[in-house]
Length: 192
Ligand SMILES: [Mg+2]
Ligand SMILES: [Zn+2]
Image 1 (cartoon, rainbow, N blue to C red):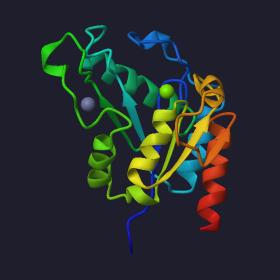
Image 2: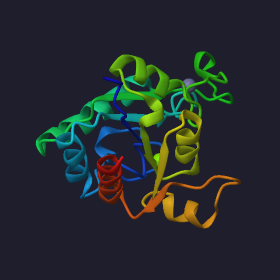
Image 3: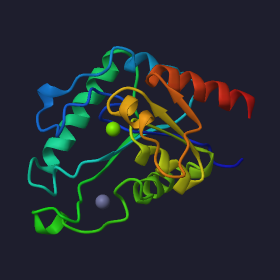
Image 4: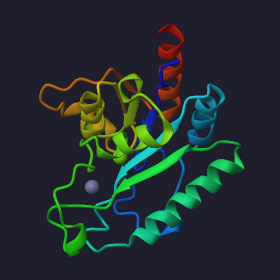
């Protein structure tokens, strides 16, 4: 049997509220529909992998330990509603960062596909059969780079992004929020 597709899920503005650089666990707010959306994908046995750019690490705004704490907290909030993410990956880099070891032009900052490739190996998923969900055009660009399908949500920066289409990029779907994205994915998988 060939490898399954996954959902590569953006964090800020998509799963949780966009609050700028998220430097404290107590600023994490799931959207009210996030647990139900993730649970619906869990119930369909579709792996869900968080993929997030966290250049605040390179910029010296917070440490990787804070990112790990935030992800553990998100996991706990989801678990309380019977939902889970299969894995969490982040890019701590930025070429203009001020912390030397993170100030590189990496291949894992979205829309680069480095994190997806790592996840695909770790979880045995097929990137080209996968979906991205996010509130920025770079999340849609990631889908193009992996040969998958990209969904733009209107939460976070998404409504503004929708009004400023990126050159040559079109989303496979533009939806109001993560729960609508989950429905679109389940419909699409069901009819493939
Ligand atoms: Mg985002
Ligand atoms: Zn990186």
